[in-house]
Structures are given as C-alpha cells and as structure tokens.
Length: 151
Image (cartoon, rainbow, N blue to C red; front, side, top):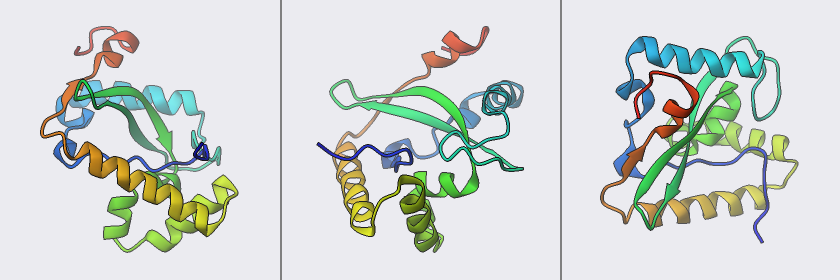
C-alpha cells in the first residue's frame, strides 16, 4: 500500500489546464469562495498548519477516469511552499524543484527516496489521465456550499 502523506502532488491532466474556478466564476463569486477558505483556515496553511501572512487559494479536484469527470471537492488555503509542492510540474518548470523537494520531505517526515517514489506515482497517474481526451467538469460542490452559485 502506498504511503499516505499530508502534502501531496496534484498533477492536473493537460487538457484541464486553465479550466479553473477563476475562469468560470465572476470575480465576486470567486472572492466569496476564496474568502470562505481563508476564514476556515484562520490564517494557517491547511496542509502544514504554518501561520503565514499570505495564503493562496487552491482548488482540490478528484478524477473519475471511468466517467471522464473532473470533480471539484474543495477550495483550501495553502502557504506558498505547500502550493509549490502541490503544483510540482509548474514548480519544476520555474526551477524550484529542489526547494519543493526539501519542503515535501520536511512536512511529510520522509526521505528523498520517498519523495521520488511519490513523484513517480503522481507522474504515472498524470500519464494515465492524459489518455482521456476530454474531461467533464463537475462543480456541484459550489452549489452545495454556496447558495446561488453555478452548478
């Protein structure tokens, strides 16, 4: 059974890049969603629990490969360091993998070998999900958590 970590990689299928809440919602609706996440977090990263001055809103998605559906499951707040690990693909492109690797190991209390294994598993999932040409988008979480939001 694979290790369960507090801080994980969340590699989005390539065809889902740029399909996010900010591109779907009005600025007023996006503010309501992210400010709710900030309030729930009470100034702390929802992964490492550090108190930081600037939190970043992050959309959590699940993927049902059989139904080809990308489902919004939550919007959380992360510190920049955790957010860099979660989006490791972008972080690697920007030259920040070494720092992200160190942070992943520190938060999860694991080794470099564990980091590489988790990254390998995330990449395998990403490759498999990229075989699906088009994902349906399920944002019903919004309607369940915010009255008057899109379904």
